[in-house]
Length: 220
Image 1 (cartoon, rainbow, N blue to C red):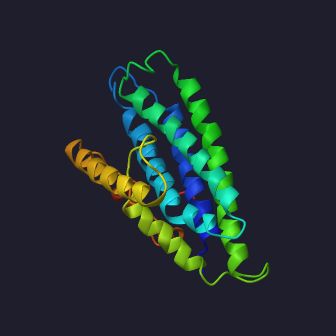
Image 2: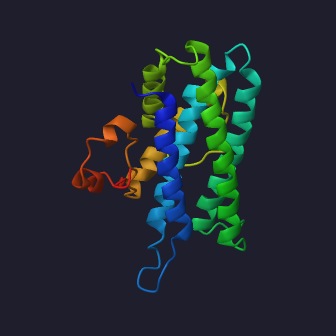
């Protein structure tokens, strides 16, 4: 059975790898924009997963008898993480607000928020599991939760949007509009955004498939 916790472990590993590539990407005289690909791909994948967790998983935890505080803490950490991703986007595209801020400082904030969000996402999954199964048996809804997250990622924005509503109906509507706008600009800019891949799907992908999807995970 593919569990939500198992999928999150795979997603976190993938995001951590992409973050490392992005943080070490550097332009060179022959390819002055060569670092854009690694950074922009990380931004897209991270933004999409973050929005999907807010949309699909956090509300379920908030509805648990003792889940309100955990969901609240996650939403605060998620918003802070999204702000750091927005700083990366602004720095990459030359915003005057961050032009004088050094890259190491930007990436330091991203790593700190990423670690906090990953920890809280694991706690969200544990909270949902504890409500649906005993300590030594699999939760019957785990597969549904994993699919729920996957489908949410398919329709999530691919850019950070820290200033739009995040909760309830206003949040869902805002993310829907943001996704449509992002999709337009992704197409206009020829931006390649890897498809979200669930853990069990990865096991059947060979090197050529990974290359065509711009989604390498040969070490997994």
